[in-house]
Image 1 (cartoon, one colour):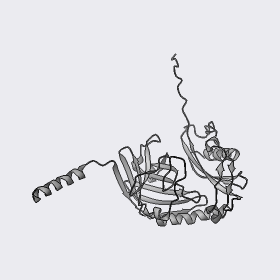
Image 2: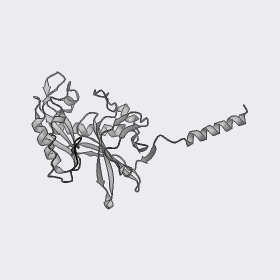
Image 3: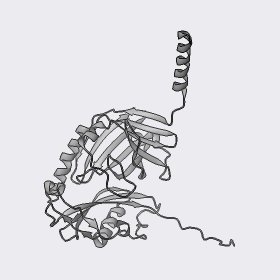
Image 4: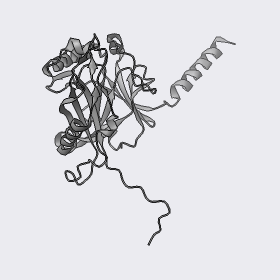
Length: 302
């Protein structure tokens, strides 16, 4: 085969490869601001802006205590029109192979000028994702955090990629903040980090909130909501305190959540390094929905 012919075939192959349709139509948004660390009294959060004035996005990574678990809220114009029924996943880049979250809540986020963007609030996850067998994922190492350079939200044939850059330094600042939270609760960060067992619910958390407890009188529009709370659990396993950290929706959600969990939740207590019962904490997340009654099969029309 002649060198000219080989070059022509190579050029044709390049055209075919570059013109092939991508798996998803990805909108890449680069960072528009530095990381902002918010050392709150109830939670620690990292925030960063992305995109442009015409196509803005905001990422918030929040922890309400130490550990690898976090909540992610991503607000972007590209999400407008999405609903909770959408099949959507959150992945890390540059690999973006396995999803780290697929459960989320949709909310409106007002911005300057009266416009609104859609916020996707992902349930607690870790950078190593979730396991389908119910077991805890492997611990997240600083090396793993430094290797993450983007977050990717994908649905259908579309995706939004936020260019975060390596997360190593940002997550180190997060750990310093969460240690401060533990001290403010009257607990020792070193002891909590070395517990041989965390508090374990004696009953399913799904039973702590009664099915008929949606506060209908608070919001007659019956909109969904999300409440995140922290329960303090004493050395006997009893709930000694409940604090709502985030509440998306009517204020009645927060009051109902703590009232019900304080009275219904019970735990096997945490154990310290020596195996003795110790005070600790438990994170809870409640998603509020109104279920529409199902139509009866075979019901006659009148």
